[in-house]
Length: 190
Image (cartoon, rainbow, N blue to C red; front, side):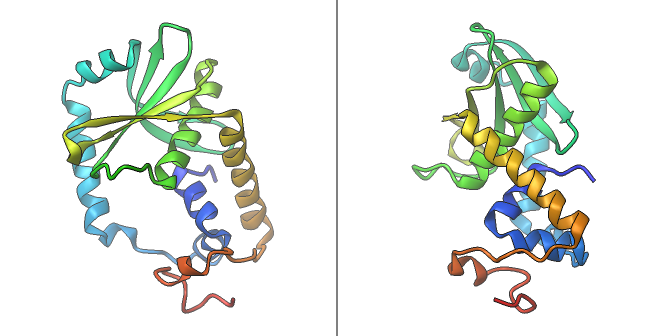
């Protein structure tokens, strides 16, 4: 099983999420979530629209649109992979969201996963990524990406593999507030 950035995000939120969904095969029914579905529809629409002005602002010298990338552990579809004049590359991801003066950790983690995939598939360094907030008039936000950020998602991917392959029941998140809205809270033993 190759993982997606969503698997990494869920694991980093709470390792038990991985256990319930992928070891016990109890689905979370994300498809019923309106915002997720609307985001996917808009996401598809944005891929069809011309975004040359955003690419110019970033300083892109090459572009790869709607790129499916994979390695031995994860896979993902990056909205855009842009080459910069300094020889580095960046992921650009469209979000069906408003920008509210902060970048959510889930968005950062997704960019870290994409950076890992870009480096392995294109052989180019990734030091930053970009988010486009479509509900804030396509506001462009730059997100720094460090080697530590990429290592964190690599370590998470390996830990997920350990949970799934060994039917390992991990410790729950140390942030108890996360349990309140969790799909699995009624079956989780804290």
